[in-house]
Amino acid sequence: QVRLVESGGGLVQAGGSLRLSCASSGSIFSMNAMGWYRQAPGNQRELVARVIIGGSTDYADSVKDRFTISRDNAKNTVYLQMNSLKPEDTAVYYCNAERLIMGVPFNYWGQGTQVTVSS
Image 1: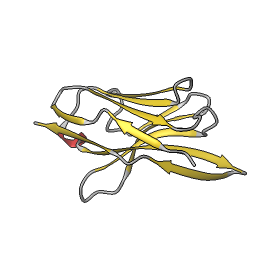
Image 2: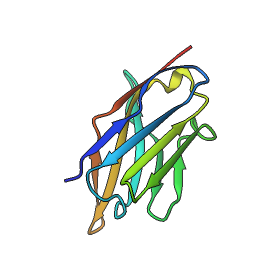
Image 3: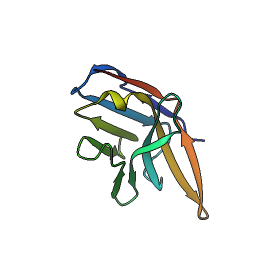
Image 4: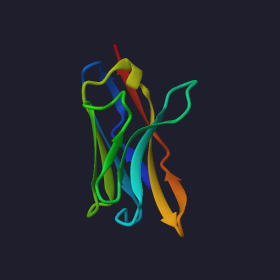
């Protein structure tokens, strides 16, 4: 079992920055992917960014050129640097870890951290 703990959320004005951290209780080195998802009230959970084993990254179109995901395998931590924040970025942000076991994906989730961007 992998436990993920997010931190770094909060209230920020539009145009500001936040950095989210996700600390894993286990090694993230062997994870197929580590990512950040978000869910706003009334909306489905959506992918924000993820980094896949080997280092390639995926971003939602809405956050490209503003958000950057990175992973520190030595610290078992994944980060999401969020710049030029907009009110529409307001959501609960969840950390995700995906492990492949015999080709089947198993997903682990953190408890979420609230990000609120005021206009």
